[in-house]
Image 1 (cartoon, one colour):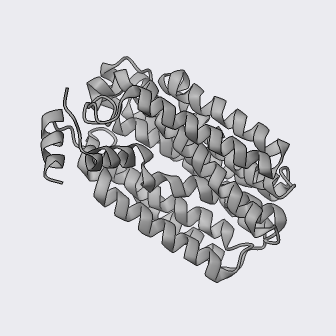
Image 2 (cartoon, rainbow, N blue to C red):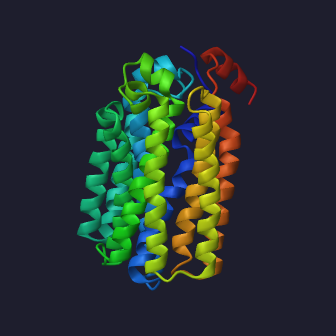
Length: 332
């Protein structure tokens, strides 16, 4: 059995944590709380809502690596669990620890938040165990997880069903379902080999891209409605325009290559969407929070996202052999 150094193990856990995705989940909860309270909620409650959501998101990622370990053994053998750098037991226990910590913090916020945290856990595990392999059900499950984050933020300040929060739920549902669908396009070959009935596997890449674009369009319409409802300032509209440009570029690139799309091209489009969604959520933050606060959150999240994508994603996404990956880490 190969023994890995603590640095290799730490990097493996960093890969599982996917730090280039976590900011989005936390910002959704913060946006939900800020919109629900019109920016006047207690800072500690808004911040704690973001922390709990981050824990839930991370737990979902570990759950995905744990429950998908057999699939990844065929399609992504260099992932931490199938490569042996993290044991299945270690992944499962980390998931449980994140859930327990998140529940404890959610209880501090109130019973509604604890209940939402439990529902989100069930949806996250259901995605990995059942819905991911069930075409659109998996994509919609991911959309619901985002909507739950918005509701969680609203509940943290006592206004879970505020109109702005409900509109945010709609926006996030369609947006996250669309970006998740793009992710399945990226993984189509591995999913087909492993028998996963995702949309591109069952209906083709062309149809999957068309559906993703339609879902993104629904999110766009909802975003305009939310900003109009909030009578958002110029900064919000500027950030929204920036997110629209990035999304349009990503989806147009996918559409033009839909009949002969390669994995690297799909991955490149998804990278743009990972950054685009930060700008979109920041547009909603700027509708209620001070401009400096909203921009600081956007800059911090964007720097973390881009830097960790460069450090991690380009390193393990290519389909290299397990030995090549082990050898590349051995020197560090």
